Image 1 (cartoon, rainbow, N blue to C red):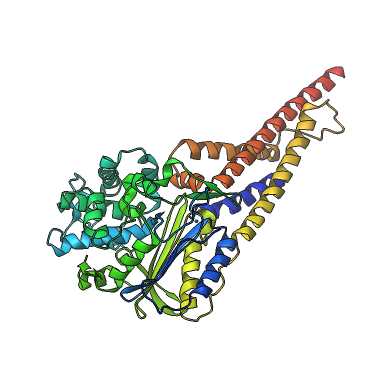
Image 2: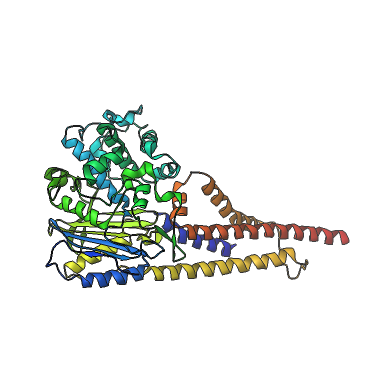
Length: 514
């Protein structure tokens, strides 16, 4: 019983952090001559791509009003197509700043009042909309939670693009706006805030969210490799998303690569070149070349947290080697990204990669720090002639540890299951079958053997714990292994029951003989 209990605890400790829940060079471009030598950056990225098993990566470096460096590394897909600065990737939650910019544009034209209750812009019957303002959604101080959004995310994947946003926004309204809690809320990150903001953009502008973003942000910033749907991005060379299966990169073409109802919160697509132009506007008062997408005051508001160490409007603040930065990580199935701006140096960096699983995150305490976060930080340190700093274990080292633990636990459970099977199904021999009797320890042992199966079935067949289904998407290899181990435990428990029945029958037969 102690051995079974230990196995379950080890499995739990191993899987739980995952819930907290991570070739050839392409074209290189420099906007102007006389830029620094980036060979050290190239060498660093090549090294990190190998350490972290990244299929492809795209990099953009901006300073002031010019793009210093653009380069693609590795492969965009299994055919060997090289990544270029124009290759689109999923940008994940970096897209929240795009949504925030759209809202602030409409605010500057007088169509949105940031301090008005969202009931003014969202047709909903729920009274909670009276007490949540647009500004609270932007600053993620509405009181909404992130875990509660997972069931919506999973259920909205099949909604048609044209009505997915409205349906998802109304679903979030039903979930979060039934309450009438008036007053201030602390910062709590939630995709629901930005889905509702995207729907407000749609309601106020009279355009679909995607059409508005293309016309008022992508077009004036000359972001010609940026897209609002998966189909558009795929037609124009989207990098193939990968997941890691026991350490090996496997292309993913499942439904969760794009969730149209969550587009304003994290399902837009862009390239390193385009995002470098976007960062140029962010660092130059909303201007890129001859166009302006937002006033300098609007940009300042976007990048200012209402309270330190909380959330601005699509941006968060932090430090890299003591240097203050504004940044945002982004992640969706098979894609990860990180962007940083150093305001004091007017320096910006964007890094994209086309692989992501839960182990990319620095769990359990910093799940927003992912592999591209470390790489972008390293690039910034190199540009400032600072120590790069450690990025922790390599992906190979992580999976060596994980796979060794899996092998040990699997071998132990397989051995005990086979031993139990021999005792249960082989010829009955009281001397070798061990003493089996109905007792509290034995009952507890059987309960433990079946508890995992009951829990797994409950989690898999219901939405009681939506994060379980997210883990199935982001770390399918370990979840599959856990399910197999749980089934083995249940089989072992079944054989223990059979062995008990045989033991009881043997005892009755022995008594009748006497």
